[in-house]
Length: 60
Image (cartoon, rainbow, N blue to C red; front, side):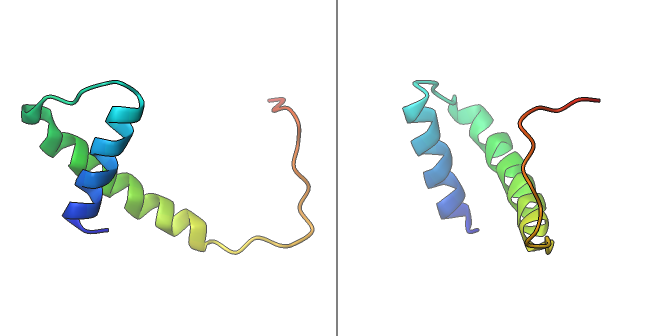
């Protein structure tokens, strides 16, 4: 994801949540979004078998 796309995503989500991100914090927000995007991409590449069933509640 490019810096422009990250900035657009951060601006859009902050607007939807009615939660302004001060300019001095936007760099940190974008860095964190970049790291999250990298990790999410790896998770989404992990193959799962087609016969998994979703559970309705987590019971430790």
